[in-house]
Image (cartoon, rainbow, N blue to C red; front, side, top):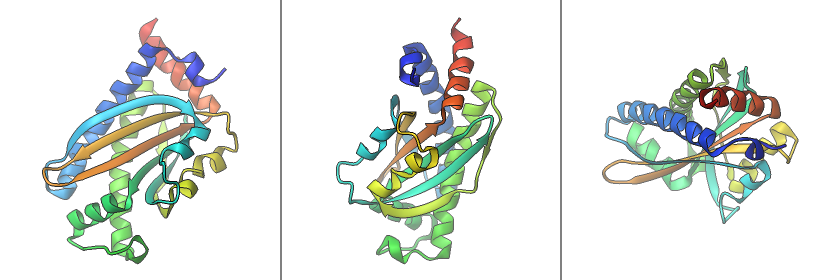
Length: 206
């Protein structure tokens, strides 16, 4: 039985609340990094087949930048922050003041900025999740990957080698006062981790 067949609407609401707390903390940290006010507008949580990840972008040939973090410990999972090219350029400009013509022209410092932003966002989110479900979470150093959306979104399938897995999709939208930056959080879990999360969340609603 898949996660979406086991988890109740109340449990989904609980996960949504955790995501809101984590994303809110992440936006506070991002505001400090960029030295501007960043507002989080929307956080949505849904349970989908992992094979549906590749359908996230209608144009699979569009270039995106992904910040990929592997999670180990009491969880085995992959957390991905996916940004479209224009959003990535805006982030680099806000942090460094550098105009980037092409994602293929990023220098070492610009790559480092993308890695650090992903690390801040993921760290805040994962801390919230770990505290709520009482599981120890250790994250890898973020890996910045630039490729077509189809190639990027196939990473979870390669990692888990199982198209029957479910995914918890956490989509966030955040913006400053002048430009919008849309990011997609994709949180993919293995089957054992799915069960641990369901059990941990369920105990609050018995």
